[in-house]
Structure formats: structure tokens, C-alpha cells
Length: 153
Image (cartoon, rainbow, N blue to C red; front, side, top):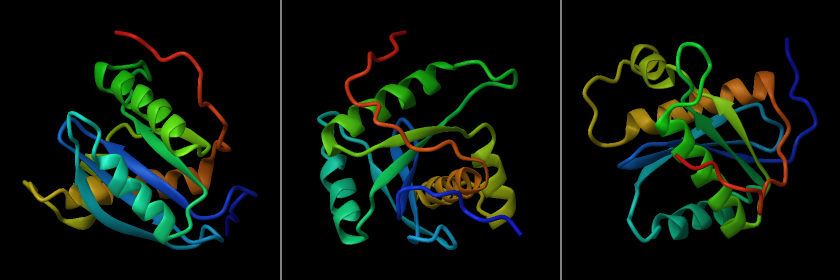
């Protein structure tokens, strides 16, 4: 049996896509994880209000962002976008966060939860749940990354 390393309580997990952001969160002891409805991404970042509401409602103290690295573990264009969005969100929410390699999380959630051709966003939130479970098992610890230079294309 693995135990959760000491971490900030109740973490939000984000699976960031170009159209939607899948969301999941864990309890303060990192024992159970739950999905939340995916949120649509807006050009003016209106989704931050929804994310902030979840953070307040569930008393979340940090977040993790899935980074889709390629098969060799290298950054992809989408990974750079996710990394920049995580830094932006940390600055906006004033919360610590960390990155997790989410390579194949959408495929895994499709297989594990039997979701195919989903346009509702549930597959994104189930992917966020998988990312969260991976983080609980492997880490890394959350960091204050706010203000660090963003990666450019």
C-alpha cells in the first residue's frame, strides 16, 4: 500500500485542451479523487472564474497540470501551451502547482472508463482524474512557479 507524501491538502487536476479543460480533485488525505464537469476554454480566459469557484467550493490549496510530452518525453506544441497556461493560472489564483507527464491519459481514460467519441468533456475530466492519481503516486511536490518566464514557441 502506498501512502500520499506530505503535500498541500485537496488538489485540483487539470487536463488542458484547446477547447476544454478537464477537472478532477482529491480529498485532503489524497485518498479519493472525484471528477468535475469540464469547462470550456474562452479567448478571454473566462473559465478562470469557474475554476476559482471550484477552488473555493472544495477548499483546494494547489493544482497540477498535465503536460502531454511525446513518446520520447519531449515537449510538444500542446505541452508548451499547457505549461504556459499553468503558469498563467498560478499567477491568477496565487496557488502552487506542479506538472505531470500526461502522455496517453486520454487514451487510458477512454479504455479504463469506456468513453468513446465524447464531445461533452467527460473524457477530459476522467483524464484529469488519471493525471491526479498519477501525481498522488509519483509526485512531484507543488511549487510556487508564479512569475517564472513562460516557454515560447
